[in-house]
Amino acid sequence: MSAIRVPVVEKILSANDRVAGENRDLLDKNRVFSINIMASPGAGKTSFILQTIKQLQNDLRIGVIEGDTAPVTIDSDKVIKAGMPAVQINTGGDCHLEANMLSDGIKQLPLEDIDVMIVENVGNLICPAAWYLGTHINLLVASVPEGDDKPYKYPNIYRGLNVMIINKTDLMPYVEYNMEYFRQGVEMLNPGLVTFPLSCRTGEGVDAWVDWLKAQVKQYRQGK
Amino acid sequence: MHELSVTESILELALENARKADASKVTSINLVIGQLSSIVDDSIQFYWDTISEDTICQGAKLSFDRIPAVLKCQDCQKEFTIDQELTACPNCGSYRSLIIHGEEFYLDSIEIEKDQEEIK
Image 1 (cartoon, each protein chain N blue to C red):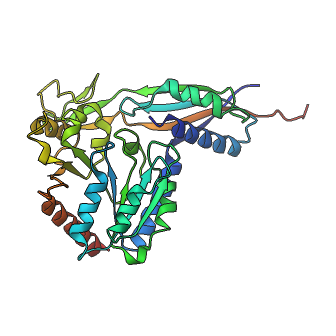
Image 2 (image 1 turned 120 degrees about the horizontal axis):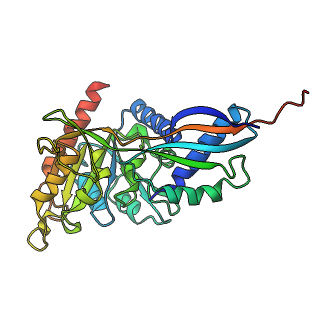
Image 3 (image 1 turned 90 degrees about the horizontal axis):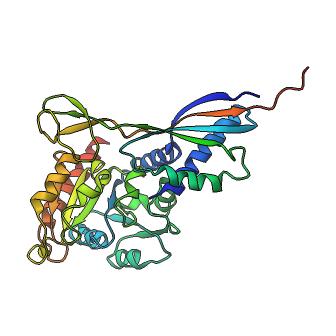
């Protein structure tokens, strides 16, 4: 018996990409602008989401999907307390969100009542980069205390970004962090990336980010 | 990283294509993986042996065709290969480059066997 070669030539994650496309269609149908937030654990993703909600609560309705590796509702509770709808997804130990997990989460959000959907991915600088979710933009929350060498050590995640936040700038006087070195690394991977240094704790720099987001949402709606 | 999910996707894709081709057994899985995809061959092989058990893919040989990264300098337009990430253009020293190859991540083909017809 001889072997027969069957050509396939299909992306390994094509099944994920298909579901991601469906997610995007559902969001577009409801005119919901969506953001996939990635970061290492402890960079301040949840604080950043809460700051964003606080600044925009009179302008936009924001729904949040919280991805975590364990069955906890710590993050979604905080969002609900801030007055916005939230859904918690437990990845069951997986290191990243996949499009089908997000699909389940999206269906639990009141899409007709929200303008923006924020997805908080699992805290991890490696895996989330490989899985397209169908969101409109990818955002990374980098932070000062995690170090200025991250683009050099985790290049893949920076390549797919549309916007980056550098959080915890209030800690600059206390830790060794060379902002220029960090940004130089990012520039090599993603030239011209829109970047907002800010502090979720003091609120410094948050305005510029919020204005940018408002403009993005406006542009998105005009395009529809 | 996430080799288990990736290996599951490879298995699903292989089984789907094997079914379409009426295969009775899959003998080889030919993958094309770029240098810049952070995938570890050994981990995929490790998971593969476990998850392909009791399927027609059991025992199939995984082969990895690694594609070297090729970048194109946006300043001098020269193409170059890299040994490590974040390398400057060897011609002009610029860091502004585009990835031409190295992000490939697909199942190129499978090799299968079919039950022979009983016509003699």
